[in-house]
Amino acid sequence: MLNGREILIELGEKIAIVDWSHLIEDYLDNINISFDQFKTEMTGGWLFGYIEALQTAGFSPMFFCFSARESYCGIHYHFPTNSEICVLPSPNIYRRMRKKMLNPYADYVEHAVEKLNFVNRPFYSFSLASAEYLSTPLLKLHREFSRQKITKIICQEYESGRFDELVLLAKLTKRTVFATFQGGIRSPNRLKQVIRKFAIKHSDGLICGSKTELLRVKKDYGLGESKAAHIFNPVSFGVSQKIDKVTARKKYGINKNTKVAVWHGRIDLKRKGLDLLVKMWQKLNERSLPFESRLLFFGYGNEAEEFRQLLDSAQIPTIKWFAEFSNDRQQIAEFLSLGDVYVFASRHEGFPVAPIEAMSIGLPLLATDVSGISDILEAGEESGGIVVGWEDVEALTNNLERFFLDDELCLKMGRKAGQRVVEAFSKEQVGLQLKEFLTNNAE
Figure 1 (cartoon, rainbow, N blue to C red):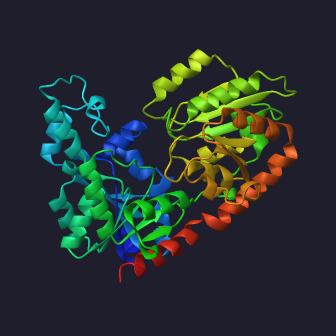
Figure 2: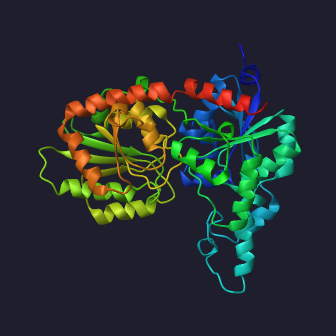
Figure 3: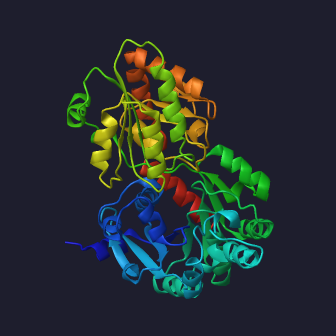
């Protein structure tokens, strides 16, 4: 019988997937899970979707990330995907600098430092500008790449300083480097913009989940057809994980005849448009509708307290928030299974995975026109959902009422949503596209 290591070797060529976060704990602490849970339980999202898609294409992906916690550092095994995780220690200079800053991810120094004045402003401005570059131990990363025989690199975000460094490292060591876009924001720093343009020009290719982003990078960075690809994020959810709606509702104490809209993901109030969904629900509740209804949220994140305050001030008893982050796909599937429609009102996304997870188990999608949504619902209602204008609360309310009043519409669009996911977002389909792009651009 093969052990984990032998299976990894059999998969073939190793490929590095490199995290964009300065520190892996920044991400894990935000969603309130431990590193042990991350490596033994966590699945889904862009990362593990990519790992599974690359495995189906014959690669052996290895996730590289960085930490200021010594207990995290080393080579670990990710049990759910049968893959490896390499955690490297962040440089001491970054750790010292980090202690003086509240938010090293901020775009502006005013948002990064609590006590700022004209004396310390130059120092903190420089520290903020250099933070994303100082967080990467490049020499240690190169040595680990060599030890693991890594020849291909995929960076999570090309709109990040780590990507700039990886391009330099790859060119110096004769490796190929690619990057995806998962929602990063272009830096307002002009010097970084110059560096980014140079890095993108000398990279081997960019992978864009949405056509809008593909057009942007071609325009902004002058990329040719061969260096930028439109490839969706893969989703490994499936109809097989759906459970009977009545059974799901019994578990959550919801009547079988109640109309239910659901949302799940990271609690990031403004970015995810959760305030817009609350406003939508307030408007719906002002109307005289012939049914009982619920709006349910499932998730956790760094703005959980702000969201709690919003819900407390709104005082709407038909809104329920399950404040937890789950690594259990079946638990998420059970939550989604109790819904009639999935609602999504993000203000900023790279390529969202959560709506596709909901569609995969047969929920129709009602979403605002943020990046990626028009690609997911390429044929509109024929793809299983309805797209309304960005931040258009009135349109969200009207179309949610339409779904709630028409059971047949929900069922019909739900079936189309499930079929859309099978045809466009399966890990096998995406794996083939990734293999072709990575192989052709490495020649």
